[in-house]
Image (tube, rainbow, N blue to C red; front, side, top):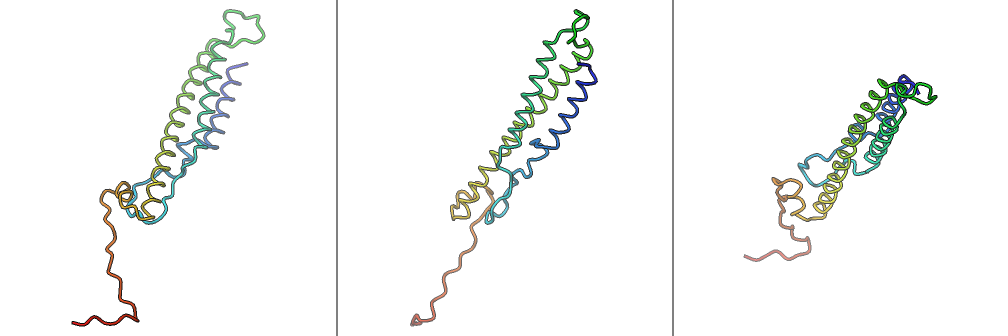
Length: 160
């Protein structure tokens, strides 16, 4: 396998990966601070993108290991399946770099999805009336002013 074939394959995989589910790019919404905890929070709590990033990291790690274990054409030029030493070292370095990129992206996505789930849970408790959950979302939050209930129309007026 030539260096050009390896580099074109890696580039194609990187482009497909960046268009399909990278957590940094496709984590549609990370949880933002909740100023008024009265409406549902919109953020991405799905782990689908981080899972794709993990698969990406595994692929590039395997690719780097296969390239590292490949026979060098310098040591055995008569072998039909050898890799030039320059292409081998470049391919291994590129694979390891992409492994690191995908791993960092997966970890970032998992943290954002987990934080989103926590914020959604606290927000739903807040909407249901749990004031402590509201304060966890926004420490400056104050409960809305509650006016006393108006007397019903059939009630007798109070005598002074």
